[in-house]
Image (cartoon, rainbow, N blue to C red):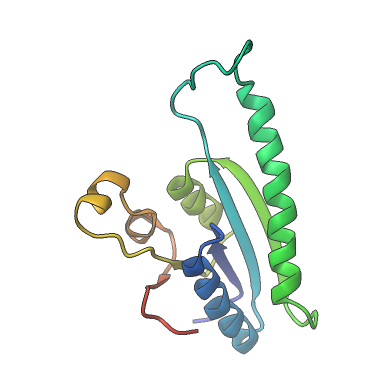
Length: 151
């Protein structure tokens, strides 16, 4: 087995930061490339009008995407201070679980490293688990770091 490309889904949570640290360690060992992916969930409902006009969803999503691209580049710069790793970042608007799996397939990723929020009970039923769905549908192995995982 050879690990050349690692995908790290990143949502700016403490959990995804831990997963990124794990991915960096693995990438250093295997001299692998890291792709950091942030997926902005699409609106699945129409928000009420605000003031005199309505929310321009495409404009709002474009603004969010631009902001998230800036933030992911800051994360990459922070993690790759010495410039020893090859880390790229991408931001998409879509469905997190399916876009993660699609990118892994399209880019022939060898490993996905992602954090889990560890929700249980009603919160898990209500919100679902992106990590769980990725594990079930990913075209490659998935390493899920949990709440108690140290990096």
